[in-house]
Picture (cartoon, one colour):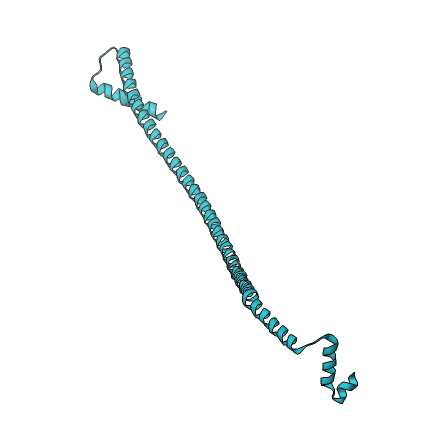
Length: 180
């Protein structure tokens, strides 16, 4: 067979093959036309719409993936922002707590100082009142002591003392009491 092809008998070989397999050029052309028509119909009405649907799905999937990537990015940014806000809020809370502690300590010191000052004022007033009361009592005691000395002296001497004598005796008695 190869020898036939090499000798130039290609057309005879093709004719022989066609006879052996029942090949007829008219049927072959008709089948090629049928094949091309079926191919056109499938491409136009089956493969075309299917390809279009697949392209739309690919586009939707791609768009969905892009949106998912954007959402993930926004979520990461949101988490960073939230973390920063929480950190800032914690720092502010700590600062406020420290300020409140400092303020309460200062207020406690201030109130303690006011209490000490008030206590000192009360003590000073009490001392002044005690001194005034002591002075009043001393003056009353002097008067009473002078009256008793005068009364005693009058009874002992048996004479009535005039004002100058009473004054002199009171002064002498007071100076002797105060020196003791």
